[in-house]
Every structure is written in structure tokens, then in C-alpha cells.
Image 1: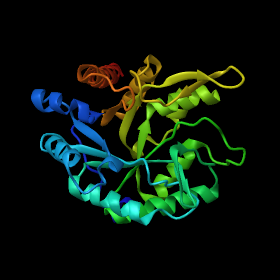
Image 2: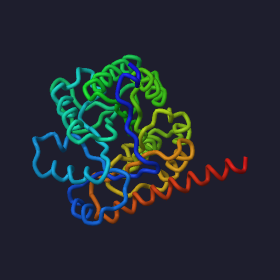
Image 3: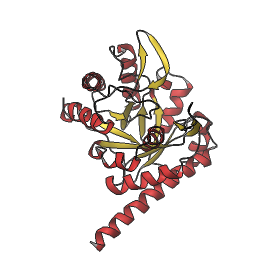
Image 4: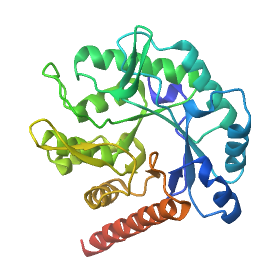
Length: 296
């Protein structure tokens, strides 16, 4: 299946920076109407029949584009997708008409059990085929192209035969889906597994990227006392992630970027300041790219 089989990815103005919508920020947003590119909502929070949550998103949607981010499809599950959940996701997308729809490269269900986590996958030929089949099913149900997010990981599988970047590249090629590049996940995985994040990004299939995520992380240690970073979304974006983001924007160009902050949610001005920093980073990276081009 190719991208031509689906409605093409929506577009946001560049540079376009958004934040995740949190109900506790609703009054501040509607009162101040900040200049932002978009808001992201988690699909599973709006699969009910309606009520106040839907009304708040409707009010946001009147003023801003939306990005719809799913966390429960379990695209990497060895079993079939939950058809009822997929139908609910399609209904949410139809109701709110988001510019972008995305999900994770992960699994969270097995034989009727649901695990409250995004679990990693072995990168094998079998997994490529299964994930591609599931993405085809999702895109057919939505009638549009989706974005697949690279994971943050804490273990690696001995049976993996694909590099993660090649795995994502092949899935995008087979299905026509786009990719959501979570730069913070790259940083977390690089620390946990000891690889070079710049080299990873240099090999990432940037031509398929439709959105970027940035988030904070938590620092812990494993049983051997080595650093273990957790993709916690509970703090400001770390300086090394900002550096990786600047490198990515210089290569990719201005790209819709989301600030994720889902736990220990701060006051609205703090979240907005993170978005402003991303806007400045896009302008700075773009300016430096143009200056180098002029010199050459």
C-alpha cells in the first residue's frame, strides 16, 4: 500500500509549534489566546459519548488545529488489532478532524489483557510484516495516513535483525505511513543502550517525518548502577535534547513540533515558555542553515 491510497498528511504552517492540551490549562488558553501552531490531544481521553471534555476540545478546535495522538492501539501486538478500539479512534478522528494522527511503535495488549505501558518489539522480518499489516488496517479505517512514533526503549532483543532506523524506513516504505520523530526518545534510548544519538539521527528516514516530539525525562539507575533514563514527560526538555533537535531541524527544515508534558503538569506559562524555546530553536537553526548556504 502506498501513500496515494490514503488522504495525504495534513499540513501545519512552518514553523509550527504546539503543546499537549491539558484541561487545567483551558481557561488560560481561551482567555489569552496564545499564538501557537496546534494542540495535541490523546485520543483515548475522548472516546466517550461527549460531555465537558468534548466541549473543551471543541472550543480549542475553533481556534487551533489539532493533532490526535493515540496510545492504546497496540500496533506491535502479535495478535489482531482491537477492532472496537480502532472504530472508536476513527470516530474521534471524524469528530475532531485533526490535521495529524499518530500512534506508537509498541504493544500493550495480549490475549485480552491490557498493560499500562508501551512495550518494545524485536526488530525482525516477522515484526515488520505484522506492524505493516496493522498500519494498513489503521489507515484504511481512518481513511488517511497516520504517523508512527519511534519508541524509547529500556531493553534490546537478541533476535533483532534490523536496526531501528531501517525498521522504521521499511515500514514507511511498505505502508506509506509517515513517521513521528520523538527526539527525546532517541536521547533516552541512546543513554540506556550506549549508542550515539547523532549517528542514529543521521540514519533516520527524515523524508518520512511529519511531526517531532520533545519532552522531559527522569533519571534513574539500573541494577548495575548505570544510568537509566525514563521517558517520563514530567519536566522541561533537557539541554542535550535541544541540541539534537537543532541538528534535526538543520537537516530537515522547519517541522511541526510538539512539547509533551503529561505528568507533574506545570502552570500554563511554564509550558508555553517551552513552546517559545522550540520556536526560537527553529528560527536559529534555519538561519544558520541559510547563512552556511550563502557562504557556499
